[in-house]
Length: 248
Image (cartoon, rainbow, N blue to C red; front, side, top):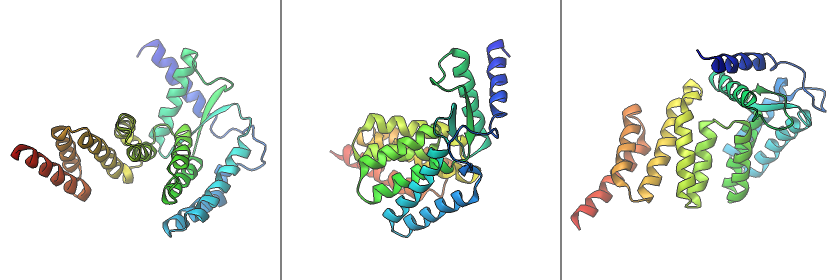
């Protein structure tokens, strides 16, 4: 192990020790430790799933406001993570930036909290899509990614918004990042998130006319998850396009 790697890992361990330290926020209670905050987000999810996106957005905004108030003026760089693997990666990333002198200006260390805050932005973005407000949805998803830059779920959601814009390069970039970071997802979500990222890549490849590459990507989806019905349907569609092309 090189000296630089030892230093980076050592800094990461030091940063990890700050997670439970008092924050420099204006509020007296940490919303990340208050079960009512998560309950509020769960209520937002129920409303959004129940086709009441505006009411869900209002709940999400309450959650966001709690975190923004508490962490206002904080000298910490805040990350949100769903798993211990994602947590550690953010701390190592921060330690490496500190080592290189490229750490975010005005921040003296990094802490990782739960995904409640970033999840509120994500759900808000999802609901905004339901309301036909894609520009605002994209803004919300990007705010979620500020807190959780390696969330496969959020990266794929951003990719889907770029698909709506037919911005194939940015969509491909987002879906590839989602594929790369799927191993950091919770165990119960890894297969689904990896499949979504790969289907997104394949979709872009079809739009770019790269049918052979798209076919291989859908086959890759099915190799890892034979029950991926969306990949099965899309694979048949791509093979139909190839057959039409060959018959001309």
